[in-house]
Length: 304
Ligand SMILES: NC(=O)CC[C@H](N)C(=O)O
Image (cartoon, rainbow, N blue to C red; front, side):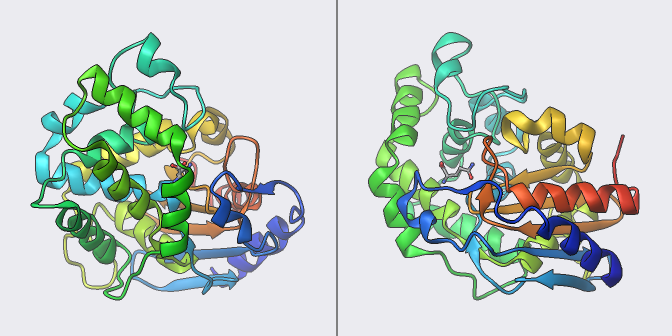
């Protein structure tokens, strides 16, 4: 397996220099566009890695999986899907278009509007308590009690995230949720700023690939039904408006983030994490997709 990871790394490395590091969140522009890492965690918890696999990065939209898991655990399926739909959008991840033109609620929980909406399913006395619930899920699913978040990226997005702010106010005006919009946004921004490395991303993929069972301890961390919902949505919506092409080229339920990470769950086989901060024009890691394509074809991982 190590051999395959090294070969995927060599393959993906050829594309370093393509794509652009996200800069609409100013702090993300500090990322090193030459970073590249690939990791696989198999269902016994063994890890194979290549490249900058210890470098921490903000998980950004990969956090939508953590948010959804926490919301489903706390509020249950019906309440969560009162707030969001289950359909792909075909629009960019931060688009406001459909909140006005189609339906009042966001189309799915894998886009920004959907993730912001489901933060409201996670309750608590204050925003700290609400965030802590999500953070505990993240600690569990990344197998790291000492997980942290990047305060600079959090502040940077909080200061500049007016597109997300407008999505949130639009949803409040549509009656999707109540409460303090700035509080919901703080929770969303902080969750996006959680730091993990590529190996930890692959661990989360392995938990999902293993039906919610921890590959190391064999403890059931997530209910099988929750895993099924998450993996279905990752397949149809996880790569934003590139999910269709990704299904053809890679065919593994995956979730990407603008920090440069991609997390994939090869069901019944392994979890894969890739990291490279330069993004393509849809906001997915350029080299990460190349690595996923390579591994999918070499190891026969497409579900289709
Ligand atoms: N696609 C992403 O990773 C987006 C997450 C980012 N925090 C945002 O809200 O814009």
